[in-house]
Amino acid sequence: ESGYILRRLMRRLISYRVEIDIKEIFKIVIKEYGDFYKELNLETIFQVFDEDSGKFELEPIFPNGGEWFFLAEWKHAGQLYYETQDIIVKGTKTEPVNKDFSFKKVKDGYTAELLNKPEPGVTALEFSIKNNNDLITGKLQNYLGAPMHIVIWSEDRMFFTHAHAKIKGNIVAAQTILPKSGNYKIWIQFQHNKTVHTFDYWITADAKHPTL
Image 1: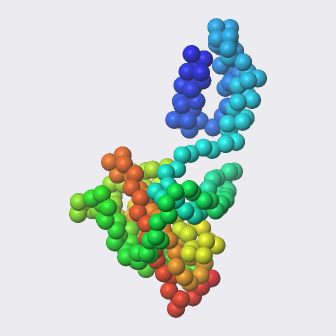
Image 2: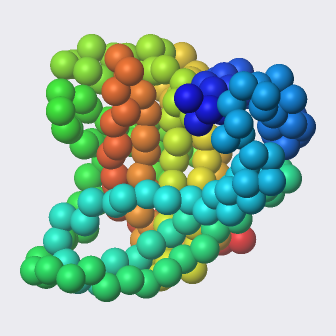
Image 3: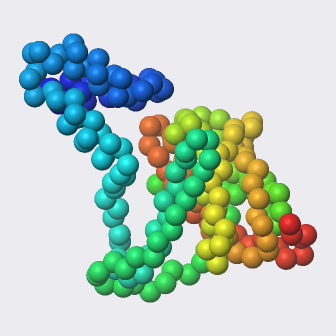
């Protein structure tokens, strides 16, 4: 029961995005409910909270065994950080997938099309999104603070960036930077009808354009 109270409280704080000293909230909970729920021990709660607040856990699903490259991104004090790690997954390896440089991708009844060819330097990325041939770009729902998230990774894995796109009429667009000519992998993610969709692209930033 005491755990239930704490979970309900934490869910409410998270739902309303309340920025507050969580430990002060714990103290209030103990003061209000401690006499009734004897198992609510402030020292133990602080210890578990400190241990868990420094950990992130997930259970990724790997479609096959082999070499994988893991990337973690997080934000602290307004600054973005990321770390990478090569990992080996046990299981049957599959043949490498050929790079698909097409700008129009179709999956699960959705068509996501990259409308412009990105260039080295400061460049725009513009997309149109259709569902069963109906243009729905203007109907995308905010997902984690944006109607579309865009991740870009250079083929040599030396450059990574994450951008948030904005809806502009019938397109969703973002401005980003490609530091040099070469191949880049792009992932986009958006939400429509409460379902999150992910598409990926290979693009070549043309060497004939000036680089940074």
